Length: 143
Image (cartoon, rainbow, N blue to C red; front, side, top):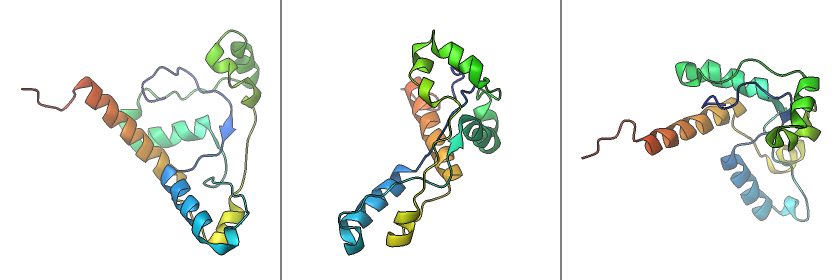
């Protein structure tokens, strides 16, 4: 999304969670007796559509997110594109679907909390932008 290679948004939603929160859940699952033999889903709230992620990027990163697309393909068009584009084809079964899940069990049994997903989106974008700048040598003095 950030580099402009994605010209339109695909209509699908998925759960997201910060890797730092996943790590904390793993620690709780290994150290809390009530977690023995249990399985937990790690997700930060509701699923997000690609348009939700794009909106957070544009709102919080301003000019640095100027290449993030604002337009979402209709499901029927995305399914048609999936027939000819292998990258979109890999997502075909997700198009138009919302994959909501809940971490309520981890929250209830372990007291697990996630950071706001908007924070994770922005932190991830900042990291990707910094890596791109490093790769391009932007802002670095070479002598």
